[in-house]
Image (cartoon, rainbow, N blue to C red; front, side, top):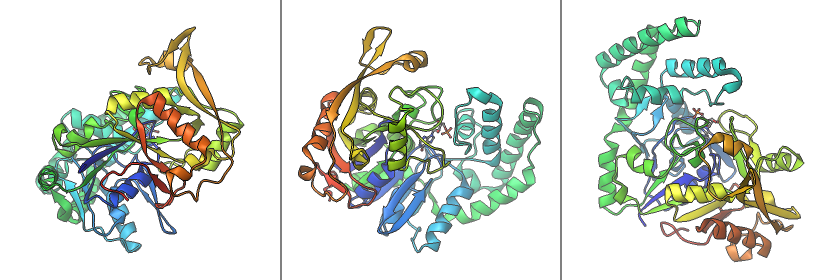
Length: 430
Ligand code: IMP
C-alpha cells in the first residue's frame, strides 16, 4: 500500500494527529487535503507536545515532504505563525509545499464568521470562528483569493479591494458593524506573499509523480465524517468534506490512486459545538471521560461533550469512506470501569434504527441501544503488543469490528508515539 488516507470516523478530535504522526514514520509525503486551522492536532514527541492547526503532522519528522493541498483553506498569518514557532523549537520546515490552488482565509472571513455566529444566537453552529465557512463560501461563489494570487501583487490588490467593498456593505448594512480597511489587509498580505512564495508549487503534479514512483503518501484528514458538509449532521458541520473521497479532490489525484482508507475512532465519542449527539453522557461518567481523556478543544479550549462509543456512527463512517481498517485511539481512557458500553442501534418511537438518520429531528430524539461488556482494571498504557491487552479490552475491540464490519489495524493506549499497538502493518509499519 503506497497511498493511505486517514479520516476521522466520528465528529473530529479522534486522535488523527497522533495516528498520522505514527504512520508518517514510513511515509515519504504527508498531505492535508481539506479544512484549515479549525483543526487541532496534538502530537507528542519524546517529552515535547506540539499542537498543529494547519501544517501536516509529518512536519515533525526531519525528512518528510509535507503538502498543503488545493482543498485546504489557508490563513497565512496562522501558517507563518506555526512555521515560526516550529523553527524556534529547532524543527526544520523547508520541506513544506503549498498548492497554488488553495484558497486563502482573509480577515473579512474571520470577521464574518464571528458576526454570523453572534447573530444566530441560540441557533449558532458553534464554529471555531476561524473564518473557515466564509472562505469556502467565497471559493464556491467564485470570488475566493487563491495562493496563486499572492504571487501577483496587482491581482491580489484588486481582488481584496473588490471583495472588501462588497463585504463592507454586509458588515455595515446587515450586521450594523464597523467596516474593515483594505489598505491594512493589502499591506499584510503583500508581506505574507513574500514569505510564502518559496513554498508554493503545483502540488497535484508533485503528488502524481510521487504516486508514479511508488512513494508512500499519507493523506491526513481533518475534522471527521459527521462534520462533513454532505454526509455529516448538517447544518452542524464544517464547510468542507473531511471524508475519504475528498482526499482525491483536495490533493489533485484521481480516486484510482488511493490504495487504502483508515478510519480513526476514539474508544468513546466526543463532540464540540452544537447539534444532536445520541450517546452523550450528561452525568458523572461523561465528566470522567472528559477529565481522563483531556477532552478540551485544541483550537478553542472548549470542553468537549463526551459519550459512549457509537457503532452506528462508525458503521456509517465505514460506508461513506469505504474504510479498510480502523485505528482505535485512547483505549486507555476506559481503563478502570466495571462495564463499558457500545451503542449498536437507535430506538426511535418504538422502531429500531440501524442506520444513521439524515433528519436531525430524528437524531435528536433517538435513544441508544447499548451492548454492555465487562471492563478491565489493568493499566494498559505500558502494553506494546495487541495480544497483551486484557481479554476484556480485546473483546471490546472485537465487538466494534462485529458491529461495523471493519477490522482494527492500530490501537492507541496513550499519547506517545510508542503507545501504539500494531495489528496490521500499513506502509510496512513499524
Ligand atoms: P468550523 O469548521 O469552524 O466552521 O466549525 C463548524 C463545526 O465543526 C463546529 O461544530 C466545530 O466545533 C466543528 N469543528 C471544526 N473543526 C473541528 C475539529 O478539528 N475538531 C472537532 N470539531 C471541529
